[in-house]
Image (cartoon, rainbow, N blue to C red; front, top):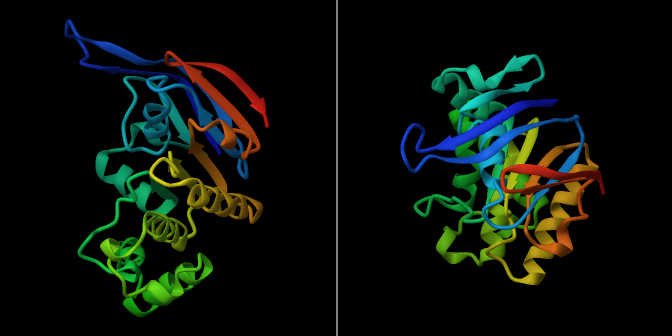
Length: 225
């Protein structure tokens, strides 16, 4: 599903402060895999995830998804591709504070052109699935951290993405809520979803089907969990 070839990512290119964060990374991800990216702070995990998910572009190398070299798409096409094909979960939840839980989940569906009635029905079903059916009219500030993260997961999966990307989805949560989030990811994978998730927490490294560990911008371990 994803083919990464010799990805190099530099910041401050051509300056005295140029930093090479990713140093020639290559690997494939098959459809249906649950890949955990791990490594110490500064290893390049988030930078790599951003290249895979089209939130950033590599300095050198290519990213192919299916038969499409997505790293060469225009910014407008990349944005549309992200919207239609990917789901995102961030450690900061990334919810719009001025929208209710239901409105936050529906927003990407409406952006894709779905009719309002259908978007809200689909969003309600997604929130119900995550145990948030009784909080649909609540605003983010009225929800706990764990509840906000469940809303962000509902938003990510409501559009039935081809790939779900999760960047440290438990980093802002306590242990009980962290376990709940990881259990949700397990269920989504068991239902057939392809997932790429970052974690630095030891207890979650084996939750996926594959572990890719980074150090200093290079892959130092790539094993089935």
